[in-house]
Image (cartoon, rainbow, N blue to C red; front, side, top):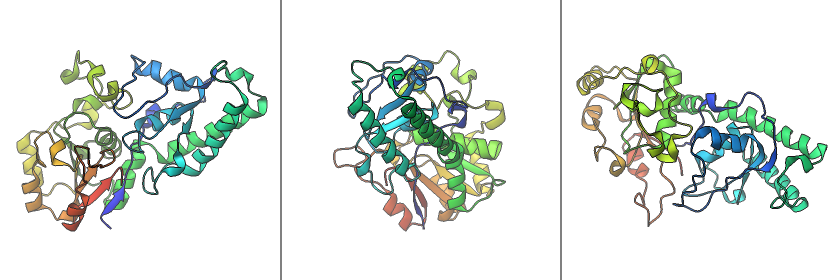
Length: 324
């Protein structure tokens, strides 16, 4: 098997350790349609606090079934009410707690039929049994998130499917134009597991805590304002900052047990091609090369209307596709 589903994930340091005090039934932030931006918060703290103070938060499919918002809601100790979740295909959100989400959807519908939330959104109007039921769901979902939805969990999933060891050296080539949730979060998880045994190239400074490359940088200019996936790792603990020449030397010397490309689609690459691919193909068997596809659903009117994974797996590469 060379084709696998994959999802976004959440850094474990973003997950609450205790359930925050709940003041509201449902969070203020409500997602809108694809391409519409409703950034009502200027800081990650404001955004997270909306979820932390609420029992439920509304989420939905937008460009794809997988969405960073789902994980942020869960990490804040909040219950996602997921619109139209019954329609989610089998391999989309493959590691999500689907059965539990269907249960909490029913419970949310019960509460909203009983209480007029548009007039009174206070959690204090709920009965003790209703509050206890909410907290029970939150505890179950938090435990699930810690065990299965962290960046480290996705890193371990890739290790398992590619049959490498945590003691191996790997190369992670971040070849996406700009920020990419799947690329950044997967790299974070692999860095947590492999440390400096995971070489990342080219250096993508935004996942690291403030360093020379990001001083005075406006993180609000990044996708999603940089919430959740930026300023997480210590550069000196996790990054080798190798030159092109050093990376090429390492490839030729077979330093790596696995080489991962963050973007399957060349048109999304900062180089309009898969960097070093000719050298990689010369020195590595194709089954030691992995491509990630973090794109939204592939539709005729999208820039990436067709996924390239069939061609890649025919060549023997391994592919992890988000909207499989």
